[in-house]
Amino acid sequence: MNNFNQIDVTHCMDCLEGLRQMPSDFVDCCVTSPPYFGLRDYGVDGQIGLEESPSEYINRLAEVFMEVFRVLKPTGTLWLVIGDSYAGSMKGAAINPEDAKRYKQGTNKGTLFKNTSYKYRYDKIENCKNKDLIGIPWMLAFALREKGWYLRQDIIWEKLNPMPESVKDRCTKSHEYIFLMSKSPRYYFDNKAISEPSVYPPPLNKFNTTKAPRYGGRKYTMDGETFNRTKSGNAYNYTGTRNKRDVWRVSVSRERNNHFATFPEQLVTPCILAGCPKDGIVLDPFMGSGTTAMVAIKYQRHYVGFELNPKYIEIIKKKTQVTPYLFV
Ligand SMILES: C[S@@+](CC[C@H](N)C(=O)[O-])C[C@H]1O[C@@H](n2cnc3c(N)ncnc32)[C@H](O)[C@@H]1O
Image 1 (tube, protein in one colour):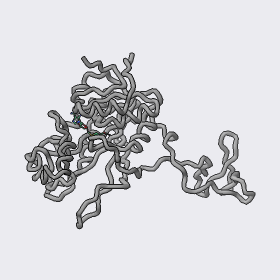
Image 2 (spheres, helix red, strand yellow):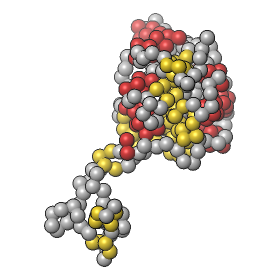
Image 3 (cartoon, helix red, strand yellow):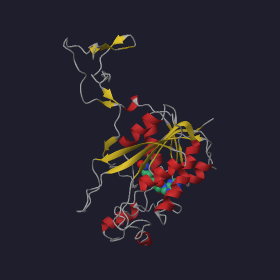
Image 4 (cartoon, helix red, strand yellow):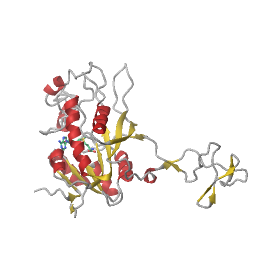
């Protein structure tokens, strides 16, 4: 019997079913990467990602994320990592990890999916010509915005080591989106926790100090201390840091764990640091190999998650050795 007040646990079940049983206003933030459209066969019945069409896929995900909306505290945020697909070729499609091994050994040549009917399923995509980029991330972002989420930012995950592609008529794809969404217009966001080093050192004045009280004929003060501004009125920043930018340059995970879509720890870390206070709860409805759980524990946050494939639950257990805790 599952207890949905329990935290520091990944329930092995369909996320929609599980989310529906969770209390409202329960978690501080949600960090997740759902299965991408038509790219992977995770080898379990009921999995999301192998729907007949993009709109069916978006509708299914929207249903999941509206339950996430309900279980999120009013101050909560969603950090949604999502990639795109091309119509027709379904380039990037992969078989499940066991098949991938056989593929490498040469005993399973030529099939993109374990079940080849999937490949034919994606030969024709609604409203797309073959070779069109489908636009899945924005389809999902707009669907969620329409249903009440605040779409706050499209963060670009620039992959430093993208999958090599043999294409000659476009650039190699090297990014995915991380959509930052919130339940309310005002929400928890610790920007200082993820600030980055500023590029330029603070300016010095003619006395070789950083205190230059007059610019543009006026004196500016803050907290009783004199400080200077640029001619345009912006305050100089002496902290040596700046607000984090919205392009994140992170390498694709090299973790070898029998799960082929592990997202990198460095990608999840800023989402959790900015989105969840210490001792808060991070949710991942598509836990996969447990990266969200592992990073949450590392930074003294709790986690709760769902994963349909029992094999991945074993990987998660190895990564997260903490005792489940009943939340009261
Ligand atoms: C892209 S992977 C997540 C990877 C994860 N971020 C990590 O770092 O390992 C998506 C996961 O969602 C799981 N999944 C697919 N459909 C699901 C469903 N309906 N409920 C729960 N999990 C599901 C798949 O088995 C897969 O492990």
